[in-house]
Length: 473
Image (tube, rainbow, N blue to C red; front, side, top):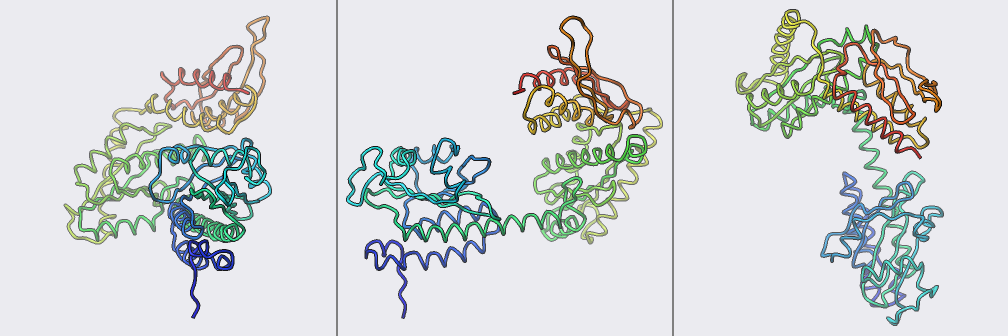
């Protein structure tokens, strides 16, 4: 009968026993990592198993992105303030030679503040390992550390990091080999959960809006009905999508659908546990469980009123509830909500005919301007021209026209020379022009004639222009 040894037993019995060190723990780790269903679960299992396999006092899983290392998960257990502070820090490869080598050459490293007898290594002793890592050990109050790279799809994704506290308890070749095997298991688990998440996204999500699709909406409705609580279905339809597509182009229509999705997400946030979905075309829905019809109606109406859609489009909605319909199938609840939505759509049409055109809220337009421009500037590195071009293009697209220009005033007069120009020359329909300046720089942005561009939109555009220039490299 074979008797497996733990890593702790092997250390006590010496090198011959160490050859079997960690084998049962590695087998357990492989099984547990195979069951992990998310990155958080992978992190928890990886750190717990690292402590068990390597007889370590502390273990962490770190993520490496753009030459920066940050703690993703720490093994459960008591930690002092030094470890807590360290777990919140980020580490740059340029500041840590061992980390740089781990990323560049995919090499693990071992460091120790003491020799086998528990005698402190003198400063600079090569037997201790990398000096920066030894300093980190001393700052943590630990005696030895080891890190091995975690590779995912052929690249260094992160590292497994472990420490021991007792002087003289160094990590040797046996532990390094076991840690390398464990890191391979972790990398496989990370790749698997990432692939599963991608598949779920492809199967469940609408690619344009990011909302779940009809299949997931049907399942959510069935689950809500099975829960026994009051179930409501909010059916929504976009009024004006065809006009936007015809007059401004399908890019503007896609932007409108994404704006609708944003409204539905806000409705879901106000109704915990709700599911927002795009059913197809301009039809959307929200499924709720455990919320009363009055609450669902109030949250939906308030959100729709607070966040008007661009290009003078509107959102009609109707609600059905088991509190009124009784114990009916999900398909019938959807049908009742659709009928209520159709009645609301006809009522909207009558109101529009009586009241004339409806315009969006400039405050909401300014908010969307900040979001789109901030995202565009975050991807740009360079001088003011590149940043202003990114700003102007994002602003013009958000405001529904598309045409833009970047200009610079001459030092000797007030004339401005065009530096860059882009967009579609107003092919999205009638438009108006907005201007913003900072120093010698000037941008011109076209906006749809139906866009809400009153204050605070001009002030916001001016502030973003200043931000683009000041933040230039």
